[in-house]
Amino acid sequence: MTLYGLILGICFVIGINYFYSHNQIIPKEKENYFIFSTLIWGIVGARVYGVIAAWNYFSQNPIQIVNFRGGGLGIYGGLIGSLLFIIIFCKKNKLNILKISNSLVPIIPFCQSLGRWGNFFNHEIYGINNKPVWLYESILLFILFLIFKKNKTHQTGIFLIYYGVIRFFLEFIRLDTITVYFLSLAQILSLLFIIFGFIIIKYENTHH
Image (cartoon, rainbow, N blue to C red):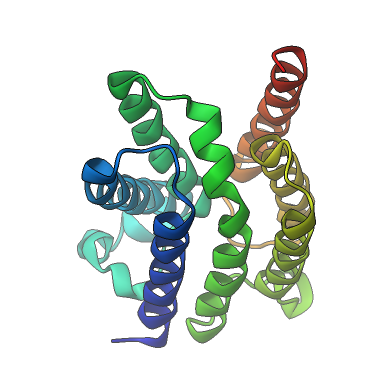
């Protein structure tokens, strides 16, 4: 197993243990199904995004699409994929989506921060003048994790806004992004994350 894969595995274990120790909403008999499916949807989403974002490479090396250990997992795709499953699961089981997302979000920045070190071992996500973009993101996400240890409200909205902002600006110094008109794909998603973050916070404020 590569160090990249090992770090991702550690992140998964940390996230799973956090879920089992903090879950108070999802019925016990459905916990395993929920966490396994969330991970699968997240991994598939992350890979789809990673392939799209690096299509110039993968279009020339299609066999590498299934080489997960070689890198190419996009966090935005992972978050969107996992969220899609959670929405479907909550609708089917008549559970509150925000309550579940708020209970899961506090550990995500820590796992992301740790996961970025996999990019270091894979020698990827560097920017202009060899700036270690992965390190900047890792540090900023760890700060958000510390914020969540004290803040217990609006976790989902704050995460969407915070990550959207830092990712939007870090994209300006990255060299491995796909551009849509004058913005990168990640920047477009960052703006959507920020908008939805504010919408969620406003919704929570008006319904509590």
